[in-house]
Length: 215
Image (cartoon, rainbow, N blue to C red; front, side, top):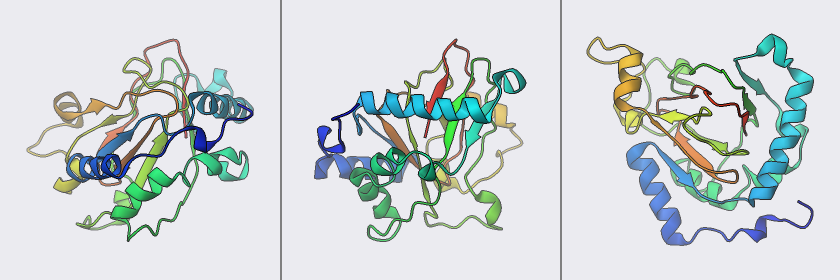
């Protein structure tokens, strides 16, 4: 990892940024490939997993999706590479006021083998009586290990950000929605995907023997 810097990965072209913005605008999310060097992503992932080992006992939390908050204060690389990444700023800034982006929190997620699928939700939707038509926030997940369908890659319901729904329609259950509409966001360590906070999403079930880690 020593010697690897953000400049080792070329920034997206204007056309690629425009394509990412268009995908987020229409589908509710976008995936930016290879935004930090893979070896850096894996190294940060190892560091965060060590923090999880201190904060969580695998025996008492087996099968759960575990979170650690406040990571900007515990690993400076989470700030150096991630929310301050120029490509993320360009995409998020398009939706959040001409490039004026405020990073709110840095969180690590550890998904253990056997973890069940998480609940389908919209971020911060509980803060509104009626969901606003504008984008009230953009969230991002940096992949610090590979995201596969079997190890619990985050699932997204495309276009759900424009429907402004917080509950299933037509008497359907969330299980119906999940089976009919959600798709896994697959990628490799070093990728990042961004989504409109009004897009329905959930953590997938980890049916593998791998630990998945993200920021």
